[in-house]
Each structure stands twice: as structure tokens, then as C-alpha cells.
Length: 390
Ligand code: TRH
Image (cartoon, rainbow, N blue to C red; front, top):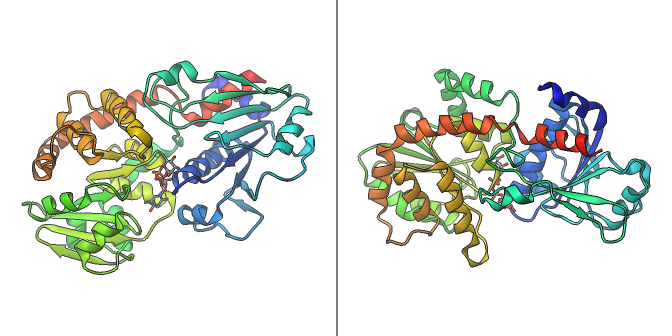
């Protein structure tokens, strides 16, 4: 830990993180990851308030879906049932984080205003590679009535942002796993893969339903190389069912031509990392799996979360500009995968070009990791900012 982080431990003994699950698993995925890291690496006493325990349980099977309060991996988890409730200053944490501008209860805010000193209040925003983020990171937003100031905290890809979530031991765990083919094979076998699938070129597929999955399956099926496509249960369900000819439940598998599609159980977060480490190419989506794919050091194709008026295409291009300069096949594949290309999609050709460029794309993945490392990790950056704000 850098020496200038040391005071954060004593200045930030408690932290409340409020998470509203808007959609899918990324909201709770990010908050759960951050909560654990703050507790485990920095000794912060974290309370995670979350409104949807069922979604939480899919990425963390230890979650009890009916519990008002539970302790998980050293984190106090509270079921956030609504905006009502009475709070006193004794209930308020030293650092209060609202994720994605979710409205925290009025009573909690009123009690925050009564604290001495006042808590550090942050709005942890979504990840984007757009340049404007640098100007907005850490900007203050005074409360209209109460003596409180909230600050924006943006994750990001440059030194003028909060950086990316990354656990201190992650790189070592990944290196160990990837240098141990027996462990990797055992892990994949445990997920149900047959030896031929473990030997094949492995693609993990996590995307939104509108991705052109059928076209990609057609290209792989007609290709010369054996491809094992591993799809978590519930993902691209229509295309997977059409390929399998059966319900796409965990364990379902079919081979046509060169392609085997296998439905995997949804796994706990640490196992999803292992899956990405074992993949030869990873298709990821949203925010958290997108970042994990970057730490996996493997080539990846990102399906960005769709927004109105195709705002997400701008964000996709901003990322590709930072990441994929000189890697035309990766840019082309990414734009076509997201429906953002200006030309018709020729998936056999797009895939062949990407496949041929994998050594260059892998080299870029390693250089990118190194570059991102230089910005520190989001949890440490956040604590450093909080300590300086108190
Ligand atoms: O699930 P996502 O699409 O989530 C989000 C949310 O929709 C959110 O509202 C939106 O703002 C955001 O995307 C951009 O994709 P994401 O972010 O990749 O989150 C998935 C989480 O699920 C991530 O923490 C990894 C985890 N996961 C597992 O733990 N096991 C699995 O088997 C899989 C496939 C994923």
C-alpha cells in the first residue's frame, strides 16, 4: 500500500454503500466487489445497502434472500427496503456512497447533516472513456438546503479519473491460474466441459439479447477451427435455444459443424474471473465484466449497455479510440457486434480477421493493463479522496 494511503484507515473506519439494482447484475456486481475490497484490503467497516437480494444471490450464492441483515465476507449487508425510516447521527457512516446517483433516504441525509464532522458523501458514477469525465471527476455538488456537499467520483481510464476496480491480489491469482493448465482443465471440467471442449478454441459469451449471436454462430459453425462457446444460463437465450434445439438450461450442449455451444451455470464472481482467464476470446458486456475482461489480459469484445438515441455508440467509440488504435479488426468486430458499423456485417470475414490479429490484440491487452495500473485502483483512490476531504 502506498504510504499516503495509510491515514485512510483511521479516517475512514466506517462506510455505507447504497446500491439500487437498476438492471441485471452490474450494479450489485460493482458494489459487492468494492465493498469486499474496502473491507479486506483497507479494514473499512462497510455496510452495503441493496434493494434486490435475489440479483445479488446470483453472483454470490451465500446471500440469504430474505434476511434484513446479514454478514457476508466481513461486509454488513442490509436489505434496503425503501426511502422511509428514521436515522440518528449514530447510524451514519464516515463515508457515504450512493452508486449511480441512487437517491438515499431523506431521513439518512437529514441525519448526515447533524453529524460532526459531516460524513464524506460521494456519488460513484458509471464508467465511460469519454473525455468530459476528467472535468467532472470530484466536482462538488452542494445540497440545496442542508450543510452537506456531495462529490462526484468517476471511474475511468486516465490519471485524472478514479481509475478502475482491481483487487491487490488479482494479478498474482490470474498468473498462477493461467500458468497451471491442470488447474484450468479441472476448473472447466467442473463446469461440465468435455475434454474436446477444453482442448478447443474457447470463447465465453456474455452479451445483451440484441447482439448478432446467430450470425456469429453461423460463422463459427462453418469455420475450420473447433470452437467451444461457453454461455452463462439466461444469456442470448433465443439464439442459444435455436442452436441447441432444446431449452438453454445449464448443462445443455450441442455440436454443429465446428461449433460446440455449451450453457454454463451462472457462477459466483470469483469463478467468473477464472472463466475469463481460461477463455481464448471473451465477449463481455455492461461495466463490470468489461473491466474484468481487461484484467484477464485476453482479447475481448465488448457489448455496451444500450442507451436511448444510441448514446452508447459514442461511448463505445471513445473506448475503442483509447484501446484499439491500430487494431482495425478489433474495432470492426466491436462496432458490428454493437450495431454501430456503417457497412453490412460479414461475420465470417470479421471473425477471421479478428482471429488472425489475436497475437497483436493480446500484446495490446498486456500493455493496457500496465498503463491502467499506473492510475492506482478505484478503492484506494476513493479512500485517498475521502481522507483528503475530511
Ligand atoms: O449484468 P450487466 O449487464 O450489468 C449492468 C447493469 O445492467 C447496469 O444497470 C448497467 O448500468 C451496467 O450493466 C452498465 O453487466 P456487468 O456490468 O458485466 O455485470 C455482470 C456481473 O455479473 C459482473 O459482476 C460479473 C457477474 N457474473 C457472475 O458473477 N457470474 C457469471 O456467471 C456471470 C456471467 C457474470
